[in-house]
Length: 275
Image (cartoon, rainbow, N blue to C red; front, side, top):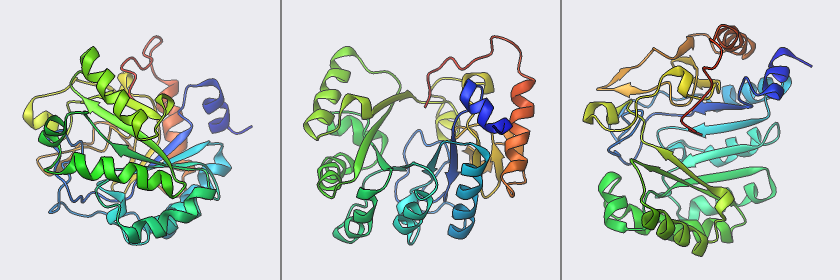
């Protein structure tokens, strides 16, 4: 077993490798980690590089892949790229769910036969609360998109980012995602992290490296400790969680991750439950 495979097996290294496919987005959410918006610099990962990195990840002993942004489905041919990645490892793709057109559904249809999940953001069962943090009509588009994705055979997860849900709010939200066909096991709730646009606004929880699960994250700017690492504040990239600027071959940042993990003090395990 490789050193990466052994670290994944014993839990000291996350099994998923994350890829930031791009940084631009059709929305400008108030708590966005990457300060993404329609006007943001794109900073794309080439689809060919993604496929090569996926093959390397599988060979090193990683167990799954994640695609995030920005909004990944703004990248041309992203559905085909995801299908190619899924030939190596299971894939989860994060999306705001507002771009699910008939055309995109046709492109996504082949994913139904592959180990792929599309994770859609939905922060509240109250449309006005959800849309205040995201965009006008976001709620309506998402609750329409989820059943359409499921009807196409695509596995759907729901991700909720919040500064805190009351028991009643969480109950309403869970009732909503269940009514849309998404099981509790496919609902992720996570806090707003005070990085990126949230830091500018002074909201969310502070998170140190020790609070964030070590999941190798690859971007156009380098490799980071966590998908919460390559954040952007006022158009400036945060480098406090940068592991290495070198991303190819993947063994270089993977080995750098292992060296950092080996140097962490005892008891500094993840504590925020962020995933």
